[in-house]
Amino acid sequence: MAKVFIITGTRKGIGKQLAEYYLSQGHIVIGCSRGSASIEHENYEHFSLDVSDESAVKKMGRAVKKAHKRIDVLLNNAGIAAMNHIITTPYTQAKTVFDTNFFGTFLLTREVAKVMIKQKSGKIVNYSTVAVPLRLKGEAIYAASKAAIENFTQVSAHELGEFGITVNAIGPTPVPTDLIKNVPQDKLDILLDKQAIRRFGKFEDILNVINFFIDDKSHFVTGQVIYLGGVTG
Amino acid sequence: MKDKIIELVYKAVKEVGEEQNKEALLTPNLETPLYGKPGYLDSLGIVFLVTELEELIAEEFDCEITLADERAMSQRTSPFRKVSTLVNYTEKLLKEENISNG
Image 1 (tube, chains in turn blue, cyan):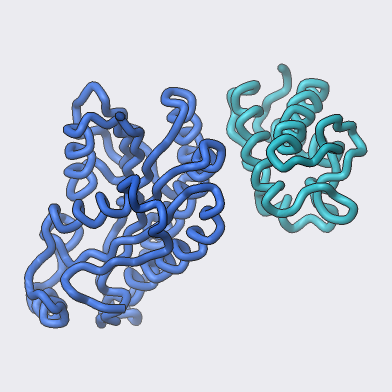
Image 2 (cartoon, one colour):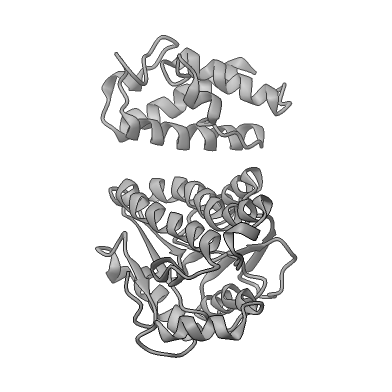
């Protein structure tokens, strides 16, 4: 049966690939990004919005509920990276990272959960990073925003569990996308050295974990963070 | 507009009453207590009520309000105390959104 997905950050990178994959599986995908749509498909609908814009997120949630009557899966994929020493990190940059990564995840979760609570089912997948357990220099703000997401994931799992909603998080290793294009190679090498399996992540690695989290048989799996590449928390 | 809001709040309260098996909420009036002492709803009930009422308001007025905003959460007398306080708070939020008819 076709499921209704909301995936944030679908204009490029992993988000776009995920949207295209679930569309190819016959599902309905509602995507969003600050820019215009880069996917054309009869089962795809795009909202141009900033995930930290409360009013816009509420409108999208309501519009999706009205059009499709339900929301089965939320993938809080939208995120921005920032690599900077704390001493040279502007306050505005730190706030921007938290706006998109943490507050975007919070707002989408809150608005989508309102729909899922009524239907008494739903799967939410948030995005952390291996930078959280690895405590990498230069990643303080980015990792802190993702650490906030991990705790948010675990508490949300408790608050929403009784409504049949699961909330989990994936912690990818670096995947060669725009997100890491400005990270120096030597920094990436240091990171790869800390993994049990030394290679970049692939789209398929992320897809595999997400498919596990949103599988109907995974209804007893919630509040978990799965890191790729053998990184441990 | 106020009559419409009262009607929607009653509808939302009844819905939550059915969901939570709270008989007193099935026949609400303006003095029906909701949250706190001697309210009929716990924090979970408020979650249901907020969800339900925001949806009814959006459908009726084509406008998005957030009932659990900073002011609602910090007021000494919670807007969720009883039906009439919730009606008044909803009306205030709608007016701020420039919704004046309905």
